[in-house]
Image 1 (cartoon, rainbow, N blue to C red):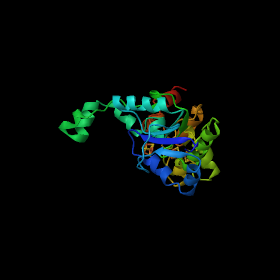
Image 2 (cartoon, rainbow, N blue to C red; image 1 turned 90 degrees about the vertical axis):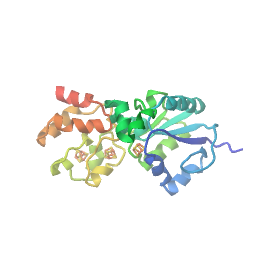
Image 3 (cartoon, rainbow, N blue to C red; image 1 turned 135 degrees about the vertical axis):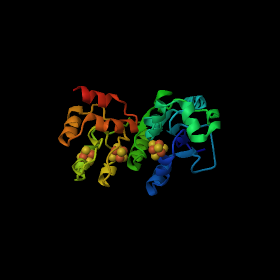
Amino acid sequence: MSDKPRVAFFDFACCEGCQLTVLGMGDSLWEILDQVDVVTWREAISEKSNEFDIAIVEGSITRDSDVDRLKRIRERASCLIALGACATLGGVHVLGNRFDRGELLELVYGKDGRHFEAGEVRPISAVVPVDYLIHGCPVNPDEFIAVVTHVLLGRPYHPPNRSVCFECKLRENECVYDRGQICLGPVTRCGCNAICTSFGRRCFGCRGLIDDPNLNAARDVLEEHGYTIDDIVGMFDIYSLASSPAETIRAK
Ligand code: SF4
Ligand code: SF4
Ligand code: SF4
């Protein structure tokens, strides 16, 4: 029997785009797969096993049955990695927590919708301890490799703690504020190589807030371009970055 670490992928509520991103990594994925035995990965293989060392978990927790399943995964894994914004932050569907769940189910599925099990949306760290976070919607393949490499070496991985603006400036992008758009780059954790703003789109904050966002600078950028905090509050909601950053900026 192989003595390589056994890896299992799991998914909860999500679009599975992060697993697809990993599957689409090509040669760099095969290099990593040489170092491990993948024993469960519904998107890629038919085999399944309850014996694994490293669990890579995508998606957010929405049901009581999810809680039980996630706890069983945690008990079996010596290392648990949260894969993507749904797992690390709860994902865009945390927005549903603001509404009556029964009404939402009926709106989407019709009158029988209320029979579905669906509750508060939570990141997986709200239910079990998480050892490693891979941010992003979807994840950055280079960071996936970096995190798995650190896991295999038994070393902690610290996600970059600079703003997306840092990477955006390195790429010499035109700032979207100068084109009349609002961007969360000043307070969002980098590590995506500013991929959205490099393609002319604004940053929606999918990698979460940096640890100590420079809220004064963020407010100055807004004011410099003629915006108020109220113009940006809705963007904080998309990845449930909480009302606190906006409230804090407003209070200063
Ligand atoms: S983080 Fe984004 S891409 Fe990944 S599973 Fe969630 S919604 Fe899909
Ligand atoms: S605000 Fe957005 S577009 Fe402007 S520099 Fe920062 S990340 Fe780039
Ligand atoms: S630019 Fe912003 S929204 Fe786009 S991937 Fe990076 S952190 Fe996510």
